[in-house]
Structure formats: C-alpha cells, structure tokens
Length: 230
Ligand SMILES: Nc1ncnc2c1ncn2[C@@H]1O[C@H](COP(=O)(O)OP(=O)(O)OP(=O)(O)O)[C@@H](O)[C@H]1O
Image 1 (tube, protein in one colour):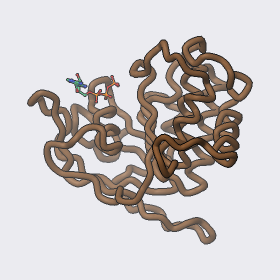
Image 2 (cartoon, protein in one colour):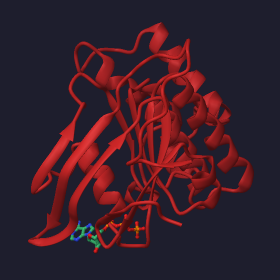
Image 3 (cartoon, protein in one colour):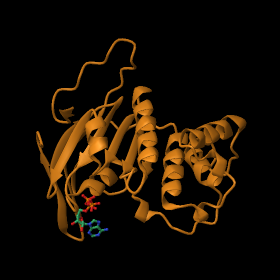
C-alpha cells in the first residue's frame, strides 16, 4: 500500500484511465474551532483509499468536505466537477425509525439520476436497485420496513443505496463498524469491485482488514496529514 501522497501507480492496460481528485490546503472548523489544518493530498480513481486516525482526528470532517457537505474555511477540492458522488454516513447518523421499506431506501440511490426529482424509477433503475441489494445479500429483506432491521442489516442497505447510485466517487464513513466478519468481508468485496470498475472509493475506517486491503492511505493526527504512517 502507498501513502496517498506518493506518486500514483500508472494504470494497467485495459483499465479505464480516470483522474483522481486533489485536495489543496483544506482547512475546516466548527464554530471557529479548527479541526483540519491545511490538508493537501491526491486521491486516485479506480482505487480504495482509507482515511485513518484516532477518534476526533478529523476523518469524518475530511470525508464531509469531499462530499460537499462541509464547506472548508480555506482551500478546496479539485476534480469533482461533473463527477457523481454517493455518501454513506456513520451509522449513528442514520435515523433509527425510518417509515419506508428497504427497497425504498435503496431506490433513493437512483433519485439523483432521474431527470425530474418527482420522476418514477424505470425498469432499468429497479433492476439496478435489486442488483445492489443482492450484492449486499439483503434482497430478501426488500419488502421489510427499514426501521425493523438490525444495525448491521441497515448498514448493508445503506451501502446498497450508494451502489445503486453507480457513482464516480463512493464515500463511506466506517461502513463495516459493528458488522460480523462475513458481512464485513462482503462489503470489502463490493468496494473492491467498485474500484475495479473505475470508481474512487474513500473509506473512513479503524478496521485493520480495510487498511490492509486498501491501495492508499490518508492518515490524520489532530487534523493534520501524516505522511508514511506506521
Ligand atoms: N458538528 C460538530 N460540531 C462541533 N464540533 C464537531 C462537530 N463534528 C465534529 N466536531 C469536532 O471536530 C473534530 C473532528 O471530528 P471528526 O468527527 O471529523 O473526527 P473523526 O476522526 O471522524 O472521529 P471518530 O473516529 O471518533 O469518528 C472533533 O474534535 C469533534 O469534536
């Protein structure tokens, strides 16, 4: 694995050549308290990049900046124009009681692709939604109420929602936390397949399996980038 700041590997022949994104001098704060300090790093396409660091290091904030959900106080992110993104928040950020079915939740991943926001999903969209649920092994739960699911099942459905988006960027905040080993490995396989099809996968994680599996790593300490972390 390489540090995300090192020279990217050249693409292998036959792979799609897609450029990554570049964070330049990104600083961010909450209520005047700075939590990210001048982060400059390249994140490659067709690869899994993990964002690591201790609790409170600024990982979720960095992901939220890339997702466009948190505006940096200085600096910015280049390479996002024209790119679609899907964001899976930390599990604790998801309302427990959500009066919709599992298929409804996964279908929301298709909403940004509809030409009109009130448009209906077509047969192709419904096929993509069901395929995404199947890839996370939760298709059999499609008719169940989302709020009735276990935490791990809900997590898989939220990853399925992101897959259904067929996005260029897949941004996930601790997607395997609390999952059993099989479910965690299933998500690893899915993320690898997404990177192989050319997606940029950025994953905040404390999971050593995810770190070992990644192509690149962005490590933060107290809001600062650490090169060549151990
Ligand atoms: N909404 C918020 N309002 C105020 N401060 C916040 C908010 N969200 C995060 N912070 C603070 O910003 C800092 C970085 O938080 P962040 O959630 O980005 O860290 P993290 O590395 O993802 O942590 P963890 O591993 O615990 O999820 C922390 O000091 C946190 O207290």
